[in-house]
Length: 141
Image 1: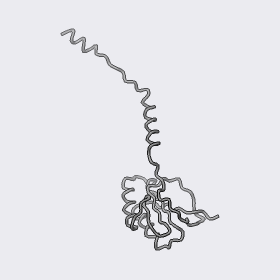
Image 2: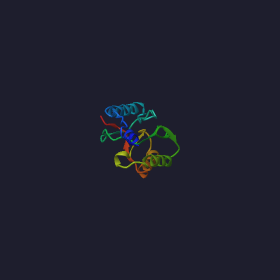
Image 3: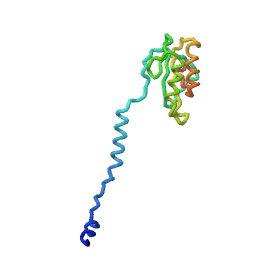
Image 4: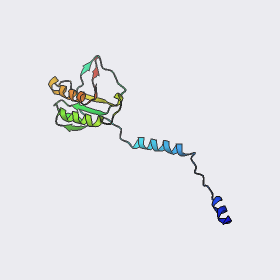
């Protein structure tokens, strides 16, 4: 029994090299950043943006994008929707997992020729869903 006890004690421990773990982690991060789809405006709408002297560029990231073309067709993240109620439910779904106000920005773009009655219900739907409205426009020259 003495030999068996010695054999168990002489069991070798194989070291695991962890020096390159940081390199592997950063390579994985870079891989997923390159392969991920960056959120961008997929509507490609040709709209005449409204002019204002109060336009300024924001650096906030947007959780969703809402657009209305010249004919009054509403798009939510590039997909056509039927009404402002659909926009409200879509924004609620997107913002359900947000924690801070920085994650609640919703970009809103519409044609400058649209009447108030067309775009106001959509803006109200974004606000009622808890989104922070980021309207897109052009600065007056």
